[in-house]
Image (cartoon, rainbow, N blue to C red; front, side, top):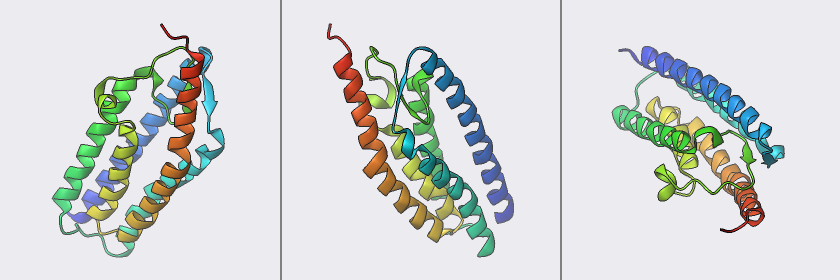
Length: 178
């Protein structure tokens, strides 16, 4: 396959994947809100949406502008992307209806401790860090990998994870111990 076909094919797969995930998130959001879920960190949600949409447009554009080519280590980057996707979908499956792109907490439910959550506190975020790097690097889109990766880490570490931690701590305080 040519670099152009790899680029277009992977981009199309990721776009379809993200659209499917947004539909799932909306369905899970309706389910959770119908059961009284409380949202935390809603103010930063648009930043994530813009960052991830920007990434989705930036890496193929940068790769195209520099002349689509498969980077040195393409197979390794592709393997890293595949591993990240497996981890992400393991996390999504483990959370079931509680998975969402928003921080929605249902009072009275214990933390999920199955799947990757047995060993990694935020497996989905680790998977996203890996995939945001892997696809751009697979096509030599180094600027996208660096800029989006840095922005994601700063936002992720500085805003999202603490907001999620506060939400889970609040839910734990509201849950009667058995």
